[in-house]
Amino acid sequence: MFSISDIIKATNGKLVQGTSQTQVKSVSIDSRVVQKSELFMAIKGDVFDGHDFIDGVVARGVRVIVVHKPVVVRDSKVCVILVKDTVRALGDIARFHRLRFKVPVIALTGSAGKTTTKEMIAAVLSRKYRVLKNEGTQNNHIGVPLTLLKLKKTHQMVVLECGTNQPGDIIWLADVARPTVAVFTNIGESHLERLKTIQGVLKEKWDLTAFLDAHSTVIINADDSLLSKQINRKRRFKVMRYGIQTKADLQAAQICPHAGRSLTFEVKGRKAQLNSCGTSNIYNALAAASCGVLFKIPLKTILAALKAFEFPQGRGQILKLGTGWMINDSYNANPVSMRSALQTLQAIETSSQRIFVAADMLELGSRSRDLHEAMGPVISAAGIDVLITVGRLAKLMTVRLKGVGQKMQVFTCTDVESAQKCLARVFRNGDAVLIKGSRRMRMEQVAEFLLASPKGSG
Image (cartoon, rainbow, N blue to C red):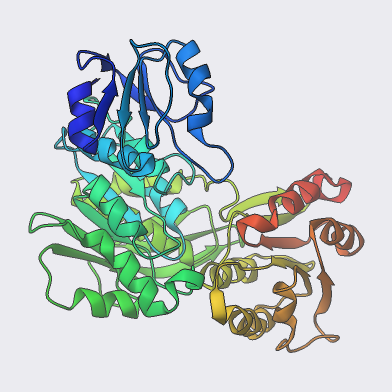
């Protein structure tokens, strides 16, 4: 519940119409579903501007509206609050609401594995606590505040994935969320178009720690050299480390893949199992286990949660494809996540072909050409039989390929439709197929095509 004075205090806004006695139960940015009891925040997006729908919102019975430009509302009973920026105001209200609670807030970021790690953390913590998490990839300046606004007294934990594609995103999300625990997956080549360099990525991601104090904890991947160097500098918080190669608080050992579909490893002398054959997911699991240990969940319970974990759609899912397998990692791509996905494809056991459908990796800025070309030797080393590139940038992966014409067939496609036609010719029942590309490349359509094909369902 928010009073008008709460909203004004949180946003530093001005009541330009209506009475300060009104209250609202929650906040909405969607004019199509906003309820009478809710405040409507007029957000200007890339396609729609919420200010254009105010008449319809008022007709639905909404009595409190927040705007960042003058509007005409003929019903004098409707409260209109003017702010400088409604997106910022959404975050301001979310922060105001979050600070009403003493609940632990676990925020995580990194260049790859964020969504899977977030889901794993929530799965582990849910074994003991009532957890609020952001759904899907609601990890930006809209999704994080909207998640926090769902926080209730019944929640005992909050788990938030925080994403970025430009300087300043993470520190703003950290200011809104005020995390008590910060988790880092890895630092690599991601969003270089605006973050420019790996050091720029590190600086941006590390801003997640900006509001931590001596009672807070940072959980890092000890095998990531950039994170390890960063944590060794002067700090004001506690540290937990996880890893495989480097000594850590939680360290995986005795890693053993099983039939190319799952793997086991030991942690603190206990056997863990994951429904994945990609070693990158061990790091995600260790990050989640670290959160469980921090919050006093027995290791036996933590490992049970990880064993039962089902991977999110489009993020390293291993799906049955006829008598073979498909790794659906189509949601997004950068060099870090693409290398990890190739490790998974290499680990899958198959007596048939290994096919890699690779689309453009976007938002890599001036290094885009080099990073796509550098993927060639990685692909060559992964035992790929058929490479199908999709897009102008992905075609550059073929420049430094080795073994073409002997062990590997290569096809270059301009779009999803041509990739589907190519797959229809080369795919055989029993093949193992990896599908990977940036979000705008629509690679989920390739996954859907394969699953629906007679050879993929037979």
